[in-house]
View 1 (spheres, rainbow, N blue to C red):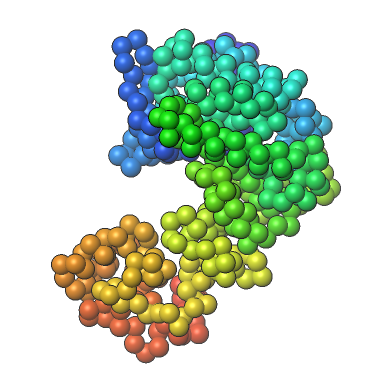
View 2: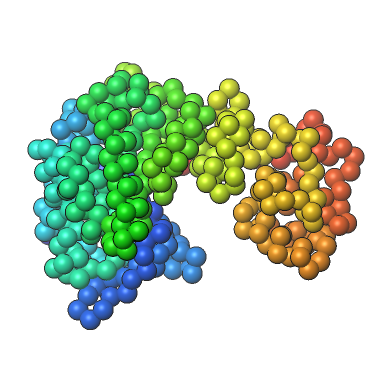
Length: 404
């Protein structure tokens, strides 16, 4: 790789690190045929391990960090004093193919600042995916960050070649957008998300290809005063209205020469973690938005206990539950029991009455679960469930996660 291209790669890979929505889960499984290149397994995240133990990684870059917009929270905003670079379509294609051949990557995550116009930028992004698929027979994973202001037919074409499309809602409220990103329009963003969602549903019904791994979005956390409750209600609306695959939560990171209306420091990374836990309660544990809101304190998730434990501590009258008799929907509300553990419990209890040791073999969260359940040989006697110090006994040890 020549020095000029290597410099571009350093700048544009670093500029892409703030975008969290790069999961490749849900992509259709593909294997390259004769004369083709790459494959997908249907699971994986940037630089992580798949369930079968393989490490999967994506080339995660921006096409360019030049941008027409001047969003206050963005390091690549128009007025930002950062090093700038721009790849050509051919350079991104070459990097992807060559990195794949060297076994560095298994797919591409491509986003971009807005240059010349939204349509021009979307056309360049689509040309990258089109060239990889048509000219190089690339069968690996491709995720394109779509431009909401671009023409619908350009996004329609992008969906023919990308495994997943995503459009960032950026901030959770229209008021926040007006304050921090006045050149963006929440209604336009949501309309574009809705159009992609409709195309995905239509394509599945007609058994044709269009963004087969669905679409996702990202929201910035901590750049404004939006509460966790409001964020969860926004996510529930996005999941319910637009059939999104994922909502990603990205903790705001202070940027050089940032606006005075922005916070001086990042929110605790534990807050981002709690939001993901609350999101899972909505998606996999049967919690309603009101249930999740009930797990907050003045609209915010506690940092010392996870949202499900916070809910259970507020509703102790429902516990303890008998693992041998309770319905699945209630077992899912027991702290320490994940969805898979609950399913294992239900299967196992068809054949035997479960003892505490049996439950311990089915979940790694028995410490948190014990005060809230009954087994064949166990009952949390002595008022364990009602102890005033139960929260302190089960709380996570204080810690601050690192962003990078």
